[in-house]
Amino acid sequence: MEQQKKRTHLHQWNSCRLDRCGSVYILTLTGEGDHRFNPSSLDDILAALTVVERSPEAGALVTTNEGRYFSNGLDLKWVQNSGSLSSLGVIRNKFEGLLSFMMKLGIPTIAAVCGHAAAGGFMLALAHDYRFMKNGRAVLYMSELDHGMNMPRSLMSVIRSKLLPASLREVVLKARKFTAPEAFEYGFVDGFYDDSAKTVEVSIGEAAKLASSKWKRESYANLRAGAFPGVIEELEAQRDPYVWPKGSKL
Amino acid sequence: MQRDREETIMCTLEKRGGVYVLTLTGDGEHRLSPILIDSIQAALRQVRSDPSPGSALVTTAEGRFFSNGFDLNWAQAAGSSFLERLRHMVDKFQQIVADLFSLPMPTIAAVSGHAAAAGFMLAISHDYVLMRKDRGFLYMSELDIGLPFPDYFMGLMRSKIGAARARRDVVLRAAKFTAARAVEDGIIDAAHDSAGETVEAAMRLGEELAGRQWKGEVYAGIRKASFPEVCEVLGLVETKKTTTATASRL
Image (tube, rainbow over all chains, first blue to last red; front, side):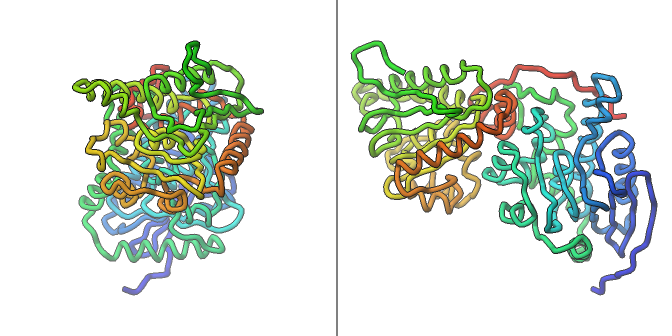
C-alpha cells in the first residue's frame, strides 16, 4: 500500500494542531514551551482527539511535539496561581479524562516522543499503544517521588499497565531518568531514532501500516481494554486518589 | 534485637550511615519459626520508629542460608496439629511482608545463601534483591513437598516475577535458580561473587538510595500504589485521606 507523504493541515488550537497524512492523523503539541497540562491545554487536546474520533477516515493516531519537550506534565504553576485548594483535583480529573479517552480510542495510537516527557507527560506517552523516541538529551522521568508528591491510584494504573515489574520499580520507586536507548532496553519504548524528523517519519510509517489492517474500531478498543484491564475503570471511577480500601478491584 | 530469654539471638539490627542492616544471625537455616518472625518484626518496628529521613534497609544473613522457609520441624512436632502450626507461621509471616511493603524507606535484600519457600518470599518482599552467585539457590519447594501456596505468596510472585515463563518455572516446576539465572530471568537485580561482596553492593545501593532523601511516607505510598494486588491480599489499608477530589469534569 503506497504511503501518501503529503501532509494536510486540519485545524490549529492554542496548544496543539491536527494534521493528516492519509489515514494517519497527527496531533502535535505546539510551541517551544514544556507543554504543561492545564484546563485550556487539556481542552484543546481533547478537542483534537474528538475530531480524530469522529473522523471515519482516521485509521491511526500519532502524537508528537515541537520544541525540546514532549510534556512536563500537570501545570503546577497554574494550580498555585489559581489560589484554590481544589485546583489540583480539577486538572487531575481533566487529565484522567484525557487518558481515558486515549485508552478508549478505537484506532492504534503512537507517541513520537521528541523531547522530555516527565510525570503526566510520561503518562500520556504510556497511554499510547506504541512509543518511538528521539535519541538525545531527552529523558522519560516519573518525577513524583523526587518532588514529594503522592501518586494517585488512577494514574498509577496507566503506568502499571505498560511497565514490567522490574521497570516499574526503576521508574516510580527510583525516579530514574531514562534515555531513549535505556527505555528501549527496559521495554517501554519500541524504537529510537537520531532526530525528531526521523522519529516522526517512522511513527507515521508504522501508523500507516497499522491503519492499513482496517481493524474494526470497536474490536480494537475492546481488545486494548482487555489487554490492560481495570485502567479505564480506574481512570473514570472518581475514587479518593490515595485510598485503597479493602475489596477494591485493582 | 535481643530476646530477653535464654535463647540465642536470632537477628541483629544496626545502622551504618543512612542504612539499617538487619542480619539473621548464626550458621543455621534461619527457619522462619514464630520466634524468628517475632524478632524480625521487632527489628522492623524499631526501624520504622526512627524518624530520620533519607534511610534504607538492607536485610541479610550469616552462614550458608538466607532462609530455608518455615520451621516445618516445629510444625510436624505437633503431630495432628501440623496444619494449625503451619497456618500460624503463614499468618505471622504475612505481617512481615506487610511491614516490608509499608516500610517508609527503600529495602534491599542481600541474599547471602539459599532462600527457599518463605525465605524466597522474604527476599522478594524487598524493593531490590542482590544475591551471591558462588553458591545458593532460590527455590519454591512447595510443589516438591506437597504444600499449597498461601494467597499472598502467589500475589508476591505475580507482582515481582514479571516474565510468565520464569513464574511458571518457579511455581510449577519448583526450579532451583542460581543467582545468575535469576538475574537473567528477571527475578533478582544483580549477582555478586561472594556473600561479602553482595552485602557491600547492597550497602552501596542503600547509601545511594538513602542519599536521594525521599520522604518516607511518599516512598511507601508509591510502593503500595505500585503493587495494589499484593497490598490488598496483605490487608494493607491506606486510610490517610488527602485533598478532596473534585467530582466535576469541567
